[in-house]
Length: 420
Ligand code: ATP
Ligand code: MG
Image 1 (tube, rainbow, N blue to C red):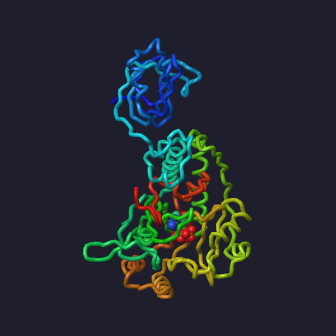
Image 2: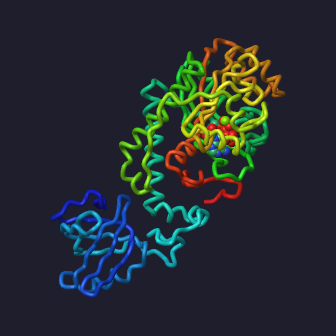
Image 3: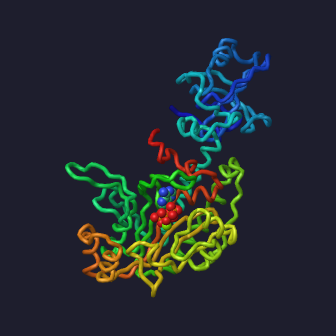
């Protein structure tokens, strides 16, 4: 079926358009069908004098959100949504919508987030919801092209694994034939193995699974992680890469997503780089947190209110970071990238020495047998390397000022929700 999008209609031509019945209006001598497609709303105008009465009657009986195809003539009309209107020759019902509708798609009656997520197919018909996912798609596209331009190779690592990445209990078990396995919580071990494989610069945009039982506005149980690992780079070099990526995303979204940003009422302010670097010691002092404690939500908020722009926290105590982070006297070469609202990314310079890595595993009470496949990669020529993992949903939600992380993913997985 050849149809023209609402954004591509040309005045004084005949067109075929298709979409959803957004609204019907009857003003006596003239009636209107507002037809919505992915790009916007079209006005189908039916003056009684020009359109046969049985066609007008058929259109009037259409239920809202039914799918129709319209063949008609386009006329300039400055008061109509696209600056033009369509006088129909023919209106074909392709599929009728039942009523009542689970959600009001005109947005006049705002729905609770849970109701919206239950009927996501309907919710995404709302321009404001759709705008978020246009920007999300663009954001991930920009991330990929930025990293490819920096000579990174995109890889895919397994999501079904036998071992935890970092120990701990935050894993979803799955049954794998006659064994227990897990959904991977991070591509960490595999992207490091690719450093031993000589790929030098890799990235992955893929799902990570966290079985944490939190019920917050910034945690999901299935996340899209943007992961990077680079040989012959240290922590400072991958931090620079990360801040340049963040700034680049803001610049390109501003340039290329003006329409969806306008729908959302969002104006981005481009973050200045380099981002401020503060130490863990500085952060806990601002937040009044004791040494050795991780920064909880309240602490992140306190520091965020003080700094009020993106920043890095560096010089972490080793015991707060995973076993594969390179130690630095009594600290380690790890960093977190923070938005004033929350953590966006964690990264580090990694250990590349096999003996040190084995020792760190033992110190963290992790069983070396379970990590044998990983440790092997460090025995036959592992280059020094560094990397980070950036949460796509957190990047999107902080950029667009979304209140809840569930708004930044089509079908969120959380403590209570596994359908749709
Ligand atoms: P937090 O302390 O905020 O729970 P984390 O330190 O446990 O996060 P990491 O293991 O460092 O998370 O993962 C790297 C990045 O992946 C995080 O900075 C975040 O952007 C994202 N991420 C991790 N877990 C989640 C989650 N449960 N929900 C949403 N994003 C997450
Ligand atoms: Mg972290």
